[in-house]
Length: 197
Image (cartoon, rainbow, N blue to C red):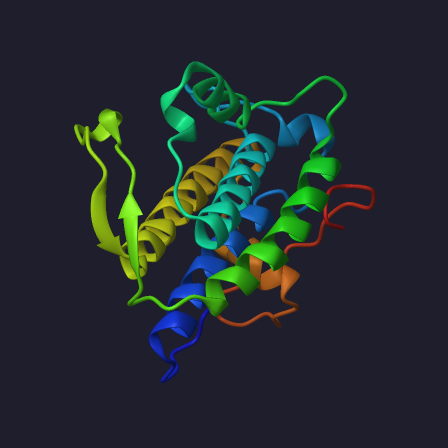
């Protein structure tokens, strides 16, 4: 959890992003490979698929913050890559996805912490939102949008996890952090051999 603090703007944005990434990752705690790829809701989303998509987004974020925005999602191949970022490739395990997530997360957060939120940037077209032209922005706009995106996916992961075994993700985050039991929280103990155990 990102506890209350008097941080500067970039530290606050990075920590809020990281908090959402914690929740996305924690959704896999104690799941089997099969459970991680399960789609118990009406959508095709799975916990492992959301983790994979978040890693895809972080890789894009590293490229964007170091090289500038691109229109990669506007062509057919880019859109196919985006859709594929939610599903397992042949032979891909949830363990592999989590390992890539962890490595990319460290790089991504280092890059986020290094940028100036007041720097000028450009937001590419987003025709799915009715925006058909590139628009000038400050980097803080992009970073605040990243908080929004990862929070949305953390919520998806929470709902899916609760459908699988009833475990709410906030308690899984605290369990992974080693928090002691209290009047509001009882630690979750994962079965040996499950993800993140």
